[in-house]
Length: 112
Length: 114
Image 1 (cartoon, chains in turn purple, yellow):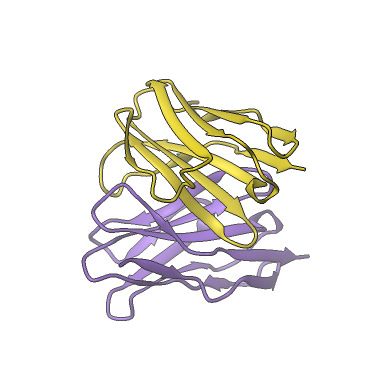
Image 2: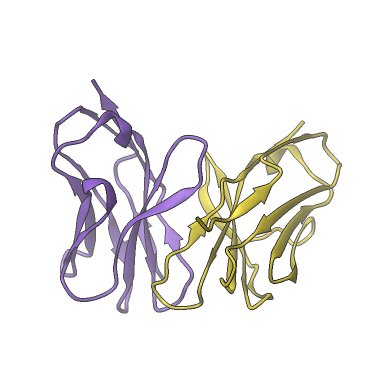
């Protein structure tokens, strides 16, 4: 069965510092991987997704993620964060369906 | 700018009352998902429709929750009777029935049951 683990429930970071949000998944078959962002009092919106091809995926707002099949990971990175990046970030996986399994989320808090 | 809409945005009700939440998916999308978000459980999938037919509602408490799509432009989630433990934010999302497709989320309905 699919599952997604986001080990860090909270990540505090100063503005302009780099950040990495970790995501590991378990699945016995090929998967599609997603990162969604949720700003306060809003719904989730897609940051980026990996379907196939290049393992380095670039998304909106300067974020990127790298698919690592051997490590079953899909970590999200940004080289320099901004105050406006403060939000909840969700990793998700699907196994050849349109259903998503979400992780528990990581709260990114950017301090000035 | 096409987007998923949900009404009401906020709902406060008393235990035992019926609650109906509505969702208008993006025009042309044929899959609709209902999620519940709480601090304790995170984001849970309650129900999933494709072409208005329910495909999976295994995440939904059957005795009090029901989900329907009366037509392609309206999805409803009903709780009867409501209980304090139903307090949560309920999200609707829509998409196309293609593996790997993006789900587009509405702004959510914040439900408080007193």
